[in-house]
Length: 267
Ligand SMILES: Nc1ncnc2c1ncn2[C@@H]1O[C@H](COP(=O)(O)OP(=O)(O)OP(=O)(O)O)[C@@H](O)[C@H]1O
Ligand SMILES: [Mg+2]
Image (cartoon, rainbow, N blue to C red):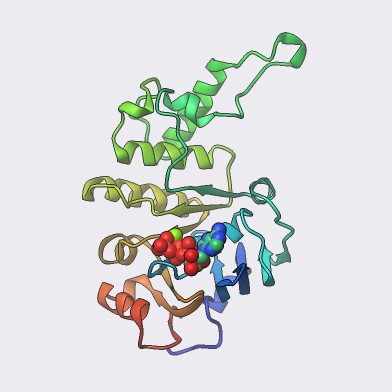
């Protein structure tokens, strides 16, 4: 059960991970934010990234999604060295990120939000009119696939609940069939039942073969119940890995704050 040789790693039996980051270092001036951080993300798996404030979680996912570069380390996608220098590079690899502010426009409806900035348009000489009908069909397909078929596509998203808005932001990320979706604090502002809906949704996506990375402080509910594996970071490095089904919230919190150095129970 104890294996500190592969920090951030997971079972060796499951083939090549979608994402494998090893020994990533990243400094912002004099702040050494990542000090050898590692993480694997496999297809069909929900990985929680947890740690105290300032542990380096957001920095690691921003490196993963091309927002930040890194100083040293290895970042492979499907077993090959990546060349990710921007969010659009990450997008081209099939990595989509849902940020905590969701980046939705409250006065627009779900269809408009799903296609914001990348509307389906006709040929240039035809005035590049937005093909609303096609957007609606595509939006409906995605919502049905995500089992969100009864969410209104025509109400302004500002009139929707936090959970519905979160689900639309996730739907937006999967419009272009990514392989990995990264969620930063998806349940932070949600009620228990809305958080349950988000758990159901991410499980649906994982069951379709996506790899999911979730940064969360909701250890006792969301992290231990809705994810498969938990990576604990402290001071820019991994300090523990757990299989979510084999750990209590208390054990995870203990690893976050200290003790249990380099525990890997993730098998
Ligand atoms: N753009 C930046 N410029 C300078 N320092 C930064 C920057 N981003 C992060 N840091 C620093 O890097 C360290 C890690 O920050 P990071 O945001 O990754 O932590 P976190 O684990 O996401 O914390 P939280 O749970 O509070 O969101 C902190 O010391 C932070 O102040
Ligand atoms: Mg953060």
